[in-house]
Length: 401
Image (cartoon, one colour):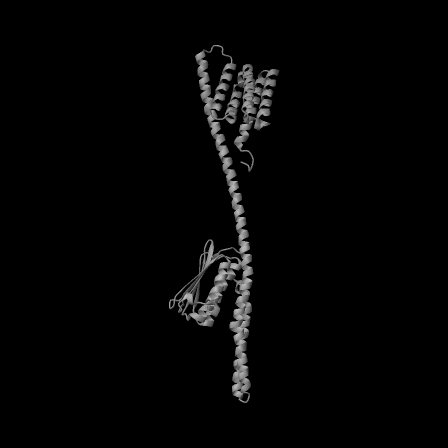
């Protein structure tokens, strides 16, 4: 079946009435040329074309249907009287009965058509009982064939309806997919906008906790060195301390600037970047950190990978500052619709209700939660004093690009 066009059965059904008039006419005329047969056959074809093919809406009017069948059966009966070969034309009339009439009217039309065919044939030597038997057999055979034709037509209509419903459903699914893509794009755009503010807040805290404190310490050492200028050894010690503090502050400044853009993701996927970060953190803190990846690792959208990477960095930083842990485990789980990051340590844990962002004890947790919720994800913290801490972040697995 071609998309949007008539089915094969529809084309066959439309052609049958014409063929069952023209083919017997050609056969009859080849045997014996008669102008009246040609004229009547062409009239029957033209009549069917006018009433059914050219004006299909006419077939919905009962009065016009009665006129159509009356004229058609008159023409068919006359053709049968001219030549018995036109009896097959009655099959076309049977098809029209079941195609145009509804319910029992179709079987009534079949009975009338069979009666016309029998009455039009020469009855020489046939008894009334034989004629009655022929009528009954003809009605039964035509009704059976018509029932088969009607069943095929109904199945064809059902297939059309089903295909139309499937097309409509497909269109709705395509529209929903487009809406979903638009919503994801809007979500990511808002996440970027909120991320800018979040990064500014994080940088303010980073500068306060590292650079400002380092510069304050440098100034303190310089003031102390100024008071001990006469003591060369003490002065050199103070200057050495100042140099070390300056280097540490410079390193912190570089680290904070690099944190604006996750450089590890430029050259590796999220799983590899997590392993690199965990390895560097372990070297710095002296605490073993392992990374486990489950599921089918695949590239994700930049906002998704960046958010999970930042959560891992912040979680490791919190472990290094507060947990006094003996080991840390990071698990990255790729699932069909979501990707999850779990960070668990065996440290001293804490009471969640005691964390206060205002004094800095809960700032990292709030920042991580904000990152995840901006992506319509879930962020949970499981901890208790003396039982370690578990952080779980789950976000939609939006594919890269």
